[in-house]
Image 1 (cartoon, helix red, strand yellow):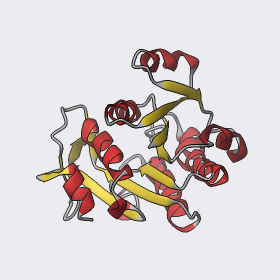
Image 2 (cartoon, helix red, strand yellow; image 1 turned 90 degrees about the vertical axis):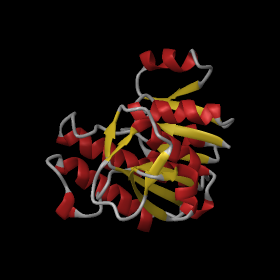
Image 3 (spheres, one colour; image 1 turned 30 degrees about the horizontal axis):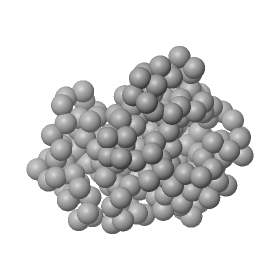
Length: 212
């Protein structure tokens, strides 16, 4: 599968790119700054500059000919509310519009646990609001074959290869396992048109996603 990863230089995004390559996919890393190229070039991975402040039509040029788009870009709520809205919300929506313009049907969104439930938003409410509305646009305003992954609190722990996707009351998950779930979801048709919460658990990632 030919996959374009938006936000490839982020902690999760870089792991997604590396794992896609290891799994035998043809992957392109969408990056924001020229200096981010080096780490990918060392792995033999193609990079393309992506500016989420551009118009959807400009973004679509980069996506032509791909089978899937992964969106893992974001401010993480740490760059100010204005940029959170412009990247995590409007940038995400423009990437969806760009995918549709380019004829890319498969789209995987890395969101956040409980983004759809305002009662569970924590102290970075603008970030959750951005995720909420971006996810809503993906569900109801596009015709994409989407998967929305909602990981819990992200850690730098070594991945376990196991997750829980139901009965979740909160919890953490290694970024490595989030990346693995992204990669697995791309070839797991049961995840299409699904929103999937996930934290560390007892079920193998592929099996957990296939049983959604």
